[in-house]
Length: 630
Image (cartoon, rainbow, N blue to C red; front, side, top):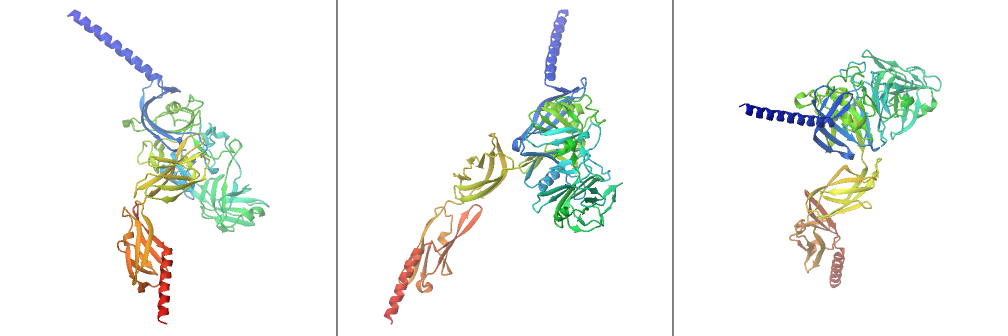
């Protein structure tokens, strides 16, 4: 008994030691795979989904684990991120679906569609929520972004948020390894006076000048802008200078954004002249400058905006962000408290970062859904996640229920994360990744039963280095040579779709969004002649043709003789000679079967030599008869 107990005890000891060794090895491996920064760890456990998007963008959703202290326990995570390769043909910017006279909350997809509508030719490839914003509409001018918002040199809002620790992110869009730049808000200096931009009828800028006065009468050779603002949510109107030589008013603006007394954006077409008290949604230029007056008038489009000066004067696309969570590959030690307490708790998060090679990473870390392993993150955990996916610099964006991501798959926008507060929250602004595809012109030169000839011309490369263009039908690919391509081996009476792609100077092939549909014809018929013969009393018309597939109605074609129509039977017609007389014109009408329908074909004088011969013969007979009866 004692001997058996010793054996059992020894076996249990060996088993326990083995477990400890295995656990130690497992735990060591666990730690080796962890990415750490500022006391936080992140581990990727499995890839849930990967989607290769247009122009090298890539969407990935992963399951992972993280902890925010060195002694804390790991919690489950779901991270969704989109990698955007550096490419000056891609545009990373920010956008809001403005009403003409206010900021507006909208779903991310609606903001994407609005961006496309306001920027013709662009396709949005990916989009996430952006800056913090007045979510409850409590500000004097409600629902605006918390900080600055600049898109394509339009300063919709110039004043940064001034919140502790927050940064401004500039999108350079230059194809370099530094496609985004983060800088402290103190660098942003807003010019004291706004500028006036004047456009021509083609929407091209013809002049930009500094405005001399704001809501004050202009002096000689000066111009002034007038607009009202909101104080305690009440509109405070502005009256233009009655003594100005000329006053140009926009009463129905494209945009009218009085963000503050010294933060205004106005865009619209001049539609009224003369001094007035400006209602909400109106702005005016008062001028004592003859040069400016010569450029302005009804129907002229103008823009008034404040702009940045100093080190930020060259910024063309920018958004306010939260704290910088990665600086040169590591999180600041105070990352969780740099902005107060916003990063010092678990919440859904959105971040933007950049890798050493210039790839931009947009990430949404799901949260507030622990039942599905979506726990959200502290600031240092978010930093560890961005570091794990290669970022050297990264910035926190708005989070919580606003953390939402979509990507484009074909013609559809696909939700890229699980938002925490259903229904999907509407937001005020977004980070947008968009592209202008190379523009091509496509024409079908000939469509047969088994082949098609096409012509493709490149109209505008839109900053893409287009070396080759390819056309595809199913698995068949043809390179466009000298603007031409031919596809053979198709099936009769079948619908097809042609897609296109191009190869750039680096040998990378990208799909184009253009698709063209066509249908092949039936097996081709062959029409040879109309054989016309003359007997003593009749004309005999017989068609010489081949139509083995019965694709046409040639056998029962309509034949017009001198404007009178007859029905042929089995390709033959016999008509009394006296009913027709001399033949001036013959038209043959029949249908040909094509994909999903028929086409009507009309042949005029399909065999004129017969007509000449017969008419000459008929005239000879008539002359002979006249001679007999003289």
